[in-house]
Every structure is written in C-alpha cells, then in structure tokens.
Amino acid sequence: MSTCISCGRKVTPEEKAVKMTCPNCGGVTIWRCEKCRLFGRTYRCPACGFTGP
Image 1: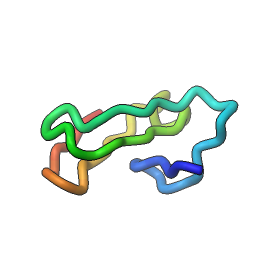
Image 2: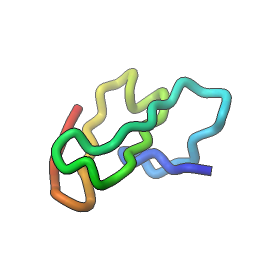
Image 3: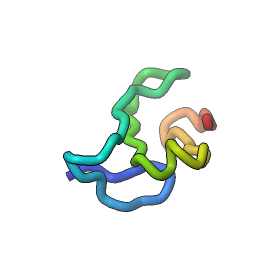
C-alpha cells in the first residue's frame, strides 16, 4: 500500500486519494489521502523541497 505524503497514513484502494508526480521536478510520485486533500494540508517533495497545497 502507498502512504500519504502529508499525514503518513496508509492510502486504501477504496478512498478518493490522488497519485501524482511532483509538479516541480517530476521525479517523485506523491500520494495524498482523501482527508488531506479535503482539508488542503500541505505536502513537501522529498527530492526538490517543493511545497504545495
């Protein structure tokens, strides 16, 4: 299972999570869980340091 980059919990297949590459460097796959997306919690790319909502 994948892990949410914002809160660190496991992302389940049935929730409305998102998988994307870093918008800045494109080198890291970022997973965000449904709750972090809903509340607009920030995330940070471990490769380039890009921070997004």
